[in-house]
Length: 343
Image (cartoon, rainbow, N blue to C red; front, side):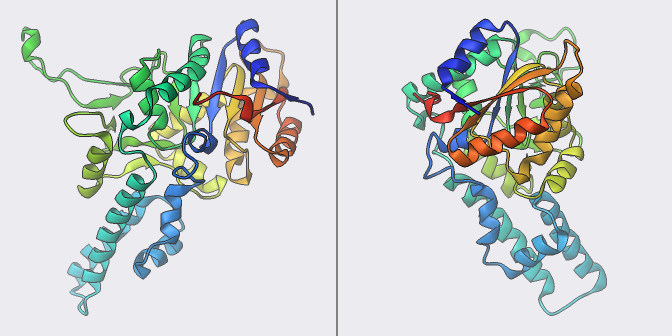
C-alpha cells in the first residue's frame, strides 16, 4: 500500500465535496510534547501506586474506572462502621482513598502544561489551521485523548465547534432584566443539534454529577486547578483509561455522553482521517464503530466512504493494511510526519 503525504489529504478535503471528519489519538498530544504526553501516561500512575490496598482493589474489581474504585472504598468504610470492625481497617481504607485522590491530581498536573497560555500562540494557530478544514467541510472532530490540549485550542482559536454543552436559565421570574438572569453550569445535551466535537473516551473537564454531565470551565482560576478541586471534593472526570476493548466499551455503554459520542463515530459519513491513532488491539471497539459506519459496503449515500490513516512507522503502515482488509470502504495511508499539526 503506497503512502501519501498530508498535502494529498488536504487536496482531498478541498476537492471531494463531502464531509471529512478527524479522529485523534495519543499521537496528537505526543506531537506537541512527547516528554509530557507519553502513551497512556494517566493510566500509568496506577502501576506506580505505593498503596497496597489500592493496587489490590484495582485488580480485584477488574476496572480502570477511578470513580468505581473510589465508590468501593467508600462502601468498605461504611461497612466497617456498620459491622463494628476494629483493627484500623477503616483507617487503612480512608488512607487509600486519599492516596487515590492525591495520586490522580498529581498525575493530571504532571502530564499537562500549566495552563492554556503556556502553549505558544504560533503552535495554537498552527493547530487551529490543521483542525479548521474538517469543521468547515461539515465533518466532526473525534478524539480518544482525555487531556486538555484539544479543548484548549478550540477555546482559544474560536473555531466553529459545538460540543453539546449549554446552560439552563434558572430564574423563575420570566420578566427578570438581563443583568439579573442566572444560568446553570455547562450541561451536556443542551446543544446536541450540530454537535461536531466528541470526546469518545471522555475528557478531564467532563464530570458526571449523577443527573447531568457537566463541563468545567475557566473562572477565576486555571482549569487544572478547578479540576483538582472537584477531585478533592470526591468528583471524578468522565474518561476511559487503559483496558481491553470489552472493558472500554462496557464503560462507554454505561455513560450517556460516552455512548452518544461512540454512536456518532459509528454513524460518521463521508471520509475520516486519523492522526496519532495506531489502531492497536486495545482499540478494536473503534474499528468496530468504523465498520458500522461503512454500512457493510452497501451502496447508500449516507455512509463512510473512505478512511485516511496516518502512519508514523512501518509497523503503523502494516497495521493500516490490516485495517483496510476489515473495513468495507477505501483506505489510504499517509505519512503522519508530513502533517503540520503544531507548525
